[in-house]
Image 1 (cartoon, rainbow, N blue to C red):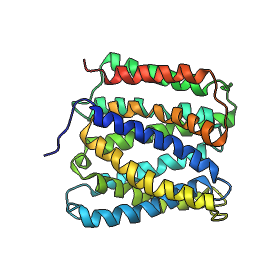
Image 2 (cartoon, one colour):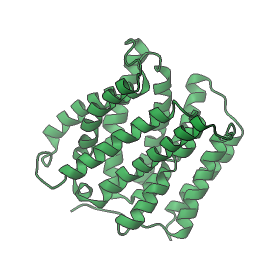
Image 3 (tube, rainbow, N blue to C red):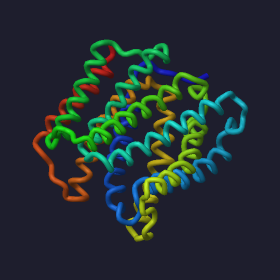
Amino acid sequence: MIDRKDHLDGIAMGALVVLCMSWGAQQVAIKLIASDISPVMQAGLRSIGATVLVGAWAIVADKTLFERDGTLSWGIAAGLLFSAEFLLIYWGLTYTNASRAVIYLYTAPFFVAIGSQWFVPGERLSRIQFFGLGIAFVGIVVAFGESFTLPSRQMLIGDSMLIAAGALWGATTVVIKAGPLANSSASKTLLYQLALSAVILPIGSIALNEPGIVRWSGPAIISMSYQTIWIASFTFFAWFWLVRHYPAPKLSSFTFLTPIFGVLAGWLVLDEPLTRSLLIAVTLVAAGVYLVNKRI
């Protein structure tokens, strides 16, 4: 029997902060080696390595891995959505700038909340909680909207891809919560997505005419190790464990912290500038997350 909670406790909140910090730092790890290994290929290599690591661990530790539990079609659906999301993110970035991409991608928590309203009984948000999502999203706009200009036709294409990626992110979460994957182990749920993306993303990299692997420099080895071992194997596993036990809309509200941590990591590692608006953004995101998770 799975112990499902209707609110986030201290363990979940602490874990989410660590996950968001890790995902924010990943943005820097990807940028650091973009000239060595192109972004979609990085994601593909990450999935290949994590499939091996998580698969080996699951074979030993997960007794349900090979059980026929009705999750195959749902797992394939989740894997296809997961792969398409990352393809659209990186493809969209070739048409629009990073600031616009962050704003549109982080519509995802709204898609999670709306999908949960329809398909996941017991995980519906109240009006004040939806208002909290809105405040957190405004925080993201404040942080990344300074260079926001009227879009060109090319930017509109990229913006649309990033909104679609956000929708796919939300759809992946809802598929996992609404079907038999909700009762599946976190490792099995993750492996469906890693295995499919390990095939699809490298092919996508070639289709997008990326240079792929240019060289295996020292930083490239370190970055790919971080992305494969920590991000794709550990943090993704932790995320799907949380999705299994806690309400998805409330979990998703915390992801608004990820781009904020990404900016801070860029400042620390890449010497990228910090703006005054970041403090306002942090306040708005924190207030929004609080409202979403406030027990009513």
